[in-house]
Structure formats: C-alpha cells, structure tokens
Length: 580
Image 1 (cartoon, rainbow, N blue to C red):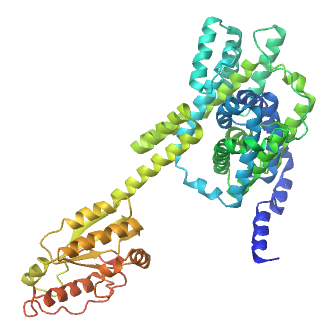
Image 2 (image 1 turned 90 degrees about the vertical axis):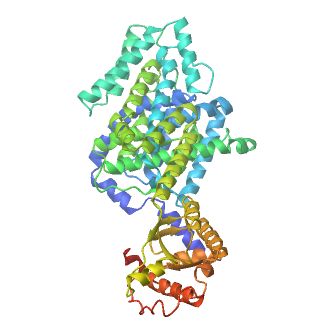
Image 3 (image 1 turned 180 degrees about the horizontal axis):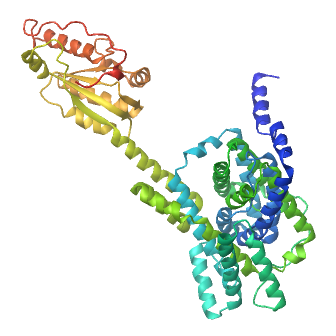
C-alpha cells in the first residue's frame, strides 16, 4: 500500500466507530435504554409536526427520525446527540418544496449528505468554534419566530395559504380565519401549548408533550370534533428504499439549495453536540465524525422518503437530562419510533393537526432563552447589533443568508476593534551618555516611533497618514518589536510611507524586526528600504547610533559636536525594551 493510500485509509477508519464506542455502550445499558425511551416519547410529536410543516407529510418526519436518527447515532461523533427532523431545517425546506416539489427536497437531502461527508473528509468540523455567540443567539431567536409563525395555519384550523414567505403565509392565514373562525382548532392548540409550558415548570422530567397530544386526540375523538382535522392515513412501516426521485438533469439547479441544507445541517448538528458537551462532564464530541455521521444519515434518509436531518438540540438535551451515557440511548430512540411506525400507525393518524401545532408553538417559545438574549444585548453594542440583525435576517430572508450576514458583520466589527488597538507612538530618545545640550541637538533631527499592535489591511493606511505627516526631521527610527502581526497590505503601506519619506530626504531605519515580519517585508521589497546599508538593527540603540553616523556623514552633526556613543549594551530582545 502506498503512503497516499495509507493516509486515505487511516482517515476513513478514523471516522468509523471504534472499540471505545462499544465499551461505552456496555457501561450502563439499562440507563441508556430508559433515556432512549423517554426521548422517543418526546420526539414522536415533534417528528410528526416537523414532517407536516415541511410539506412532505407526517410519514416523512417519522422516516427521518427512524433512518437518520439510527445512522447518526451509530456513525456520529457525539455519544449523546439525537438526530432527526428539526424546526430550523423545516424553515429551509418549505421554500424548496414550493419551488421544486417533494422530489426536489429528496434530491437536495441526498446531495447535502454527500457534501457533509466531503466536509468531514476535509476536516472542516473544527471551524465551528469560530461561530460568534451573538450570531448563534440571533439565529436561534429567528428560528423560534419562524417555527411559531409556521404553525399559525394549523393552529387556526385553516388550509395553508400559498407562498414561501412565512410572514405572508401567516397574514393570509389570519385573514382566512377572520372570514371563517375555527375556535375548536385554536382551543386544542392553545391547550396543548399551555400544558407543555406549565408542565415543564412543574415537573421538568415528565414528557408533557406526548401527554398533551394524547389528551387532545382523545377529546377530539370522544367529542366528535369534526373541525379538528387529523393527520390522516399513515403507512404501516417504512417504504422500500428507492432512487426513483433522482433526476440527474436537475442536479445543477438544486446545487445551491443543497449547499444551504448542508451548511445548516453542519451548523445545527455541531452546535447541538457542543451543547451536549457543556451539559456533561468528560464528554467531548468529534466534529469531523459528527459531520460524517450526519452525511450518511442524510444520504440514507431520502431513500426512504425522509427529509434532511440534523442534530436536534431539544431532544439531545432531554437525552442528557434523563441520564444517557452512550449512543445506545439515541439508537433506542430511533428503534422505539420504528416500532410505533410499524405497530401504531392507525392510532397516530388520528392526532389533530392543531395539537401538533400546539406542540411546535410551545417548542418555539421554549427555544427563546430570555436571560441569554438580555445578557448578549447588554454586553456590547456590537453584540446587540449582530444578534438583532441575524434574527431579523432569519425571519425576513432565510437561515443561510442570516448566518452569512451575521458572520460578515461580526467579522467587520471584530476587524474594526482589532484595528483600533494598533498604535503609532512617538517615543523619546534614550539620553545614554549625552549631555542635555547634545541630546536636544540629536532630538532635533531624529524621531523614534514605536509600532504597537497589528499592522494589517484594516489599520495600515492610518499608519501611512501619520508617518508621512512627520516634518523637520532627518532620520526616523521605527521600533517594530511590538508589531503583533503583519500582512502584505501592511508591508506595502509601510513601503509606500518609507518611499515618500525617502523622497523628502528623510532616512528611515527599523529595529526589532521579527523573522515573520522580515519575510513579509522582503516579499514586497520593503526590507532594503528599512535597512539601506544592509545591516540588521536588533535594538533601538543600535539604530539610533546608525542614525547619528548618517547625520555626521551628511555634515548635519559633527564628531566634535556630538561625542561617539559607547556601544549599546546587548539586550535579550527588543520586545523587552521599555519606552524611555
């Protein structure tokens, strides 16, 4: 086996389940099985509701929870992650269904799965840690608003109006309800949501969502509430896997939606896995394995008629709180849902759509962490701006654009903050062995500046303006030991400033240039301008001595006027010198 093939094989095997995973499963199976059963009870109404909201039907939500949930549990990078259909993904899928139809959604899910596997192979999971907290909070707030608004038609008991913009659809649903009110549906939705919210405060460990849905279904059946429209017939089992939906000619037009779905699946899954890590001690997920597992799950889910899946934060949190310790719990959750699909489909089909709408309304409300939002808004104006902008973009545009906008604004504000830390300070010359008169004479012709902080594109032009405004001096010494970073733009701007000063007859010298800075300066041919005689000036005293020699050579200072300065004492490094 060649070295390249060996590296590829090593990479593939690192993404597959190992002996440690099997050891974790054997540690406490009883507790994992109980946690998985609890999560399945919580997940059932959510899977049904998100399947209905996506436009592909409740059976699609169940298929996703079973197929994607089991594969992600086995191959994912988190021991505690629970995967399935989510509200965030539903928000993205609704316009795709409206444009390309159900077969388009299945194709998009398959393509997104392939993209996720490719991201895992490229080790892209580690970049999730760079996601700013205000973007995540704004993203979550926007998703909660969209999920809540998506439930308005079913909660009001009216047919879903045409349109792919949630605000427009909601307004049309309210108008339809005003013409023909359906107070039965409203009562069921409000009652289910109230039971869930109140029950979560009273007994957080009890799955009140399934209790409320069962109660609403029983009431609707016993009271013969015709206005409470049920889910409808569900197949007793999963369909046979098929690729009949795949149209090779449509792959090009579906690439952009597939990229959006893959980006959202990666973001939400890694965020959910991070939340699970934070709720436990000693659990750490592998981000690349998580992307790999989600990729396989999304490749398989469309084959059975399922929608794209991601890690589900709410179900993962329930899994952790109920004592799960290994991936056996999330696998059990998928198995229990599979049993329900095969054995209880007729009973599930009688659940009123308004009851599922109430479940998702309560879920949307519980997604909003008021304390976190308040703290983020009070942190800085920049954080508050990013949070609000991301939330509004999520509501008005779509999730991918919202994240991109949030990241761009956060990056711009961060660059601005870093650039403001950069300074160019004039520092007094070291008196050394000179008298006051001799030092004053030197100070009339030599100016020393200390560059402090990053010298890069966001701050470089300010340095150019400050440097080129220097007047009535013969030599400028740039103390560069405190330059934390330098890019090509900073080096080019510095070179431009030196050239302008040189044309005015001002010699520019530099001290304390670090190896990394020297490489950047040399790449733009700026190093020879800062070291005109080819010598290195490791410390500022050496550079000032060279400046004095230059003034004597040009006749501005005479050897009789300014005595030779003794050789400077060696310094450990320029970064340790202090301004005089």
